[in-house]
Image (cartoon, rainbow, N blue to C red):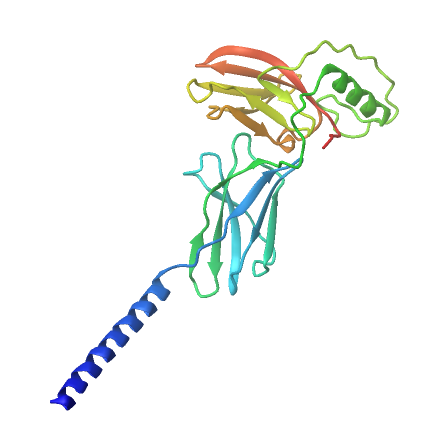
Length: 257
């Protein structure tokens, strides 16, 4: 009787051990690794992605970008040395509007995974709170002329032997679209989520640059690299397709942190 009880107890223990072993193995093979959080910071001249990764045997890590955070993600580049611990990527040509990012990780064994979706936010170490005033613009134009650099839309480089030309500036910063001390362009429309705003940007000669079809957030930062060069730009704000404000802004060649 005792021998029978021992046999039953051993069989039960063995069954539990085998079951738990298979359970752990199944869980290990079906649960993908969790990708760590990463940051996307709006700096001057770029948007920088930084992350810590403990993954090994990685084939590549692709950086994907979208304007709506849900659809239309496209791969814009690959991260160098994907098996390193500290990784970074610089988006030097961000899109006009909100830039959302996610990472696609492909392993050598064929497995892959996606990271969380991250919205690019302003870098807190850059003081971009000061709105450029007329005195700042005049100072920036004077410095550019002294260096022989044009601030006109078609003059993005050095202008040799160009005679000095006086420029009368009649301008004031807009309360809705303006340049800050970091050189980036801010769009501030507090009631944007409730109303349909769109913003168009132009060169001073009227050439169309780009449009933000719908401003969905009350505060938006456009990275200065989107505008391709320093100088004057015109903009037009529309609400429900009707003109709301039409004015201009100035992007300095140099900026202050």
